[in-house]
Length: 246
Image (tube, rainbow, N blue to C red; front, side):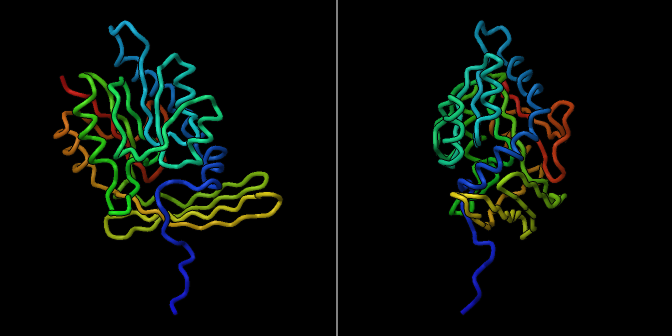
């Protein structure tokens, strides 16, 4: 009998331990880029006579949604992980627990998908990116923005680690053809006992040229980014800002 895989394949949805650790240690890393995202949403709503609107795909614990709401945005969002949406609801938000590739797209000023949210492969080996880009092109108003990031096919993300009271986290990335495998190990105190979990999640890492061509076909003018405003993206990530033509 073959030995068990120490990093079994897992769905893109985060389990409760990874969701909790992500909220404590990883999501705050995005904070320096949030003012730029807020400015992009406000610019898209100029002249509309209303507050700007945000739809966040892969909202996690709702940190970005809450910041946008505090900036007077009308906010909606979703995440595939029930553990993540439970954390977001604890903030007073109302995200849906849904797959971004199957969820309806509201006509908002700004759609975001941060932290590789559109890159995770489903059971059929497909990322949500293609479906989301096409649907956004059909629904969004001219001038609205679709902003997201993906794994960089040319740069392997560095190993990552963090720890705090009652938990620790480690991650590494492996290249498997044109797919990125992200292996995570979490240990967290639950009912006074440490719980260890290991998982491997697969992500698409398309070439920027292919992503830009996809966005062009969907009706967007797009450019790749290495930062959100003045805040550099992590090594191994490529950002995209796509403006609906019109």
